[in-house]
Image 1: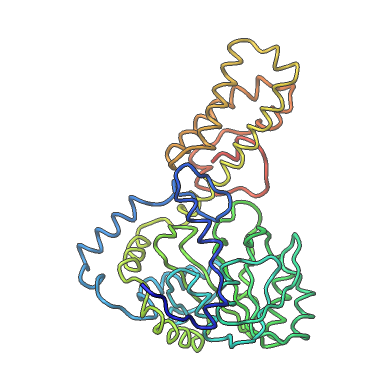
Image 2: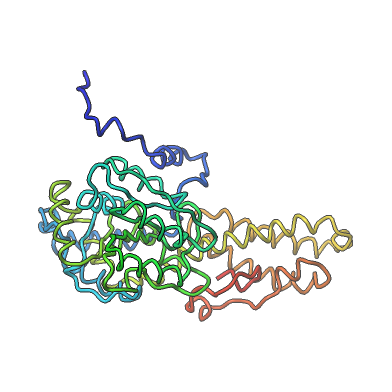
Length: 401
């Protein structure tokens, strides 16, 4: 078929590098470290299957019908309640359910950004957000970042110089750097937004995935005078295939976003929204977050200890091990590999249990080596697991939980 002549705007938009990355990840022989994909072995597959079955059994016709643009009422109410953990005291009317948080970025750009308007972003910044702003013909003003996140001092100068329409950032575990905006800078950012009347889009897909250190408040919670729009998603905590995100903003802003969404897709998939709401009625969402954190943390620690083991094998103490002691080392390494490479949550959980048992013997055996320092720690039980992530970073058995 012959292609028509594209618009000038379309010619400005480049293909998403992230989508190209995801094409590669569909090949089973490829293990990609490039895309921010959640651990599939932690997806609540059985629970989501039951939730969909219950929706079809109890409200099947409604789940297959058109719905309201704002989103399914019970799901909006759940989000509003959940946002209290992030310090946001809001009503369900301040929540708009979106088709993933990516749509949220696009909707915000639609209602705020005119061609030529300046948008402030960090350097570097989330590629897919840059793609959205470019599609709306924004001009970019970049500010630096360091280990504490966006340089708010540079932002202040940029606000005075460029008078931007919007500031975009990922303040918690920033994509791609992984940095977290310090509390003092969050407070400064909220104050600047209030004083200058500039909109801030706070993109927070990763905030629920913290497994060490103190949780920080959302920027949107720090100054009610500031025109801050908060954005999050189920993509990193439940499953990205659901394509459910949400925007939290002032009611007037939500109304404008709703009109913009009506022109895009009418509403987010009714079935997915109702299934998610049904799931959350009985599902321990905090535990599902913990599953994702367990997988991330356990794999990180397993990889670290495997590296330590590889280095220590050149020491004289290793050469003096008895055959039984060598078998203990092999058992430990197998458990570490099971944690590092397990292909489902239960396999990783079994590997963690085997690892705890193996290290009980191994840490005592290697008291005179660096490995004992790396491995020595208390064994874990179910009560430890229920408490969630520990603060700080230690390479020890206590981290395998």
